[in-house]
Image (cartoon, rainbow, N blue to C red; front, side, top):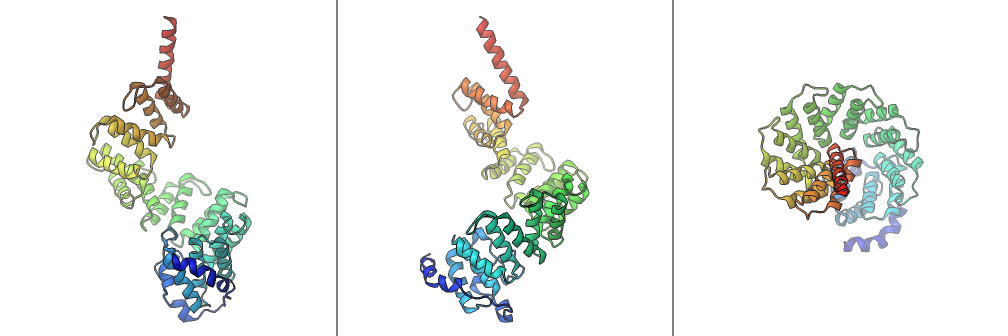
Length: 380
């Protein structure tokens, strides 16, 4: 980081005014520099290296490498964009906007969308949805799938434009037809829910499968769920398990939870409580509320793990933070019966009321029992 801290004041002024020239030489277009290795955008179709996800970029390596590359190849718009990414990772947002704009003005689509995103979030520039849409559309009109997907959400959410589900579908389809997995998955949901397109479970499955076959975890999970429920495909628990496992093995929490449920119920796999606990744990450790609640129940009942009321309460409490009615109810019972916590009627009533407010029927019945008991005690 020392190199980064010293380099900024020395070279910043020069790089801010560095002119970008159209017609990058073939050499600069095709060469792979250290800037490409450390800062290329994995979604940039003009990248010359594999690309780095922004959250995983090592700014201490990317920044000096991109500085040097831009100094060596001042006409490369690709490298200029990647230097902008390094600035953004370094949280130098004002100069990030300037750098992105210079590349965006040369019609470099990833830079146009990146500049638009700065306006969308008010980073380095005033927050401005119209500017966001302006730059996203410029990139989308060049066929940049990521920007087309972004415009789909603009219309889906009515951000800076009238809400228009059909326009959303049209933009999602443009990106999906290019193989952009996030758009394929979203298009699947549009058909599944009948939003912006006629409800069509088979079309939904087709788009989920396109994304799932490319390893997109959310689509793999959804496709597994479609096989589990028989929506758009014949019901097939073994296929459901296969797709859940693909997503679960990649760390997708919802699929890990569903795979745990399949082991718990013995659907599509032999019933195995220990395997169920293992998958619930993987999901729960990522903060997935449904798995946290299921894990609480496993500890409470001694299924797949030694019975442990304190562990049960701990997991119920985590799940309750997500507002899950079942977890709120279980916490209420724990306090009512003194299981895993000291018996506390006040706490029991508080948690049961929270569950009842969310429509939990058993919680309402338990509250009625408490009230009936109080009335009976009062009459004695």
